[in-house]
Length: 128
Image 1 (spheres, helix red, strand yellow):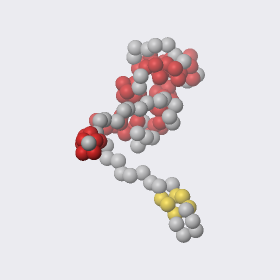
Image 2 (tube, one colour):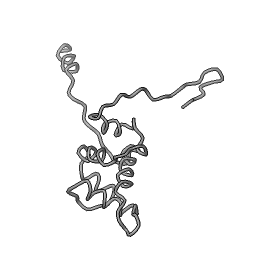
Image 3 (cartoon, helix red, strand yellow):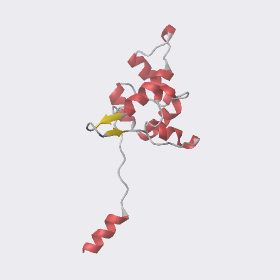
Image 4 (cartoon, helix red, strand yellow):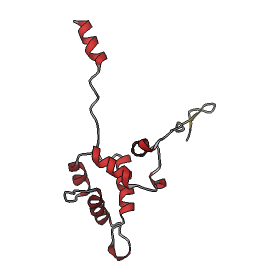
């Protein structure tokens, strides 16, 4: 992306090079380094997401019943969002992509507390 700062300066905003291994793929998807539309298997990152986000957050956002599996959750989300194939069958793949998009757009709230820092503890001791 190009951003014109003034008539002589153009800021180039470009993604860095992201090297991935199979172990990091889910993490890269959840950090928006890989486009949701390009995924061949959107189910694995949704499973990784569900392992991180409390179930209550998903239930509240999508207004669905409690679920025991990723497939059950995706089926409920597909029905709620009207993501159905011919015959009224839930489109699980599109539901998985919708959940990932919601996470990347900030609709699914998730955070982690920072780890305690040894630097902060040491600076407190030095001040006393």
